[in-house]
Image (cartoon, rainbow, N blue to C red; front, side):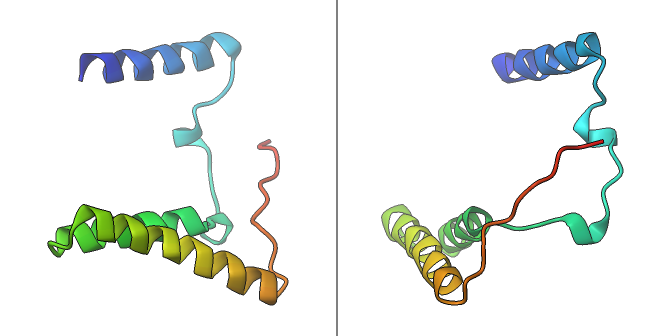
Length: 87
């Protein structure tokens, strides 16, 4: 736990020294938020484990989620989300 807090503090210190704003304080439009296939896979993994499903089966289900979403995106010619530089 201490090492995690040290890493967070070091990152915040680096941002302050570099003169950049922390991402927590940037204004973001609710419509600018994008969810990737990885987010959905993580949601599937955590949900299945919370339901008591074996971690191995939950992991395979998460991987299958990514595969299905990527294949559907390719079939519909949907591109991956792109992120523009913050102002």
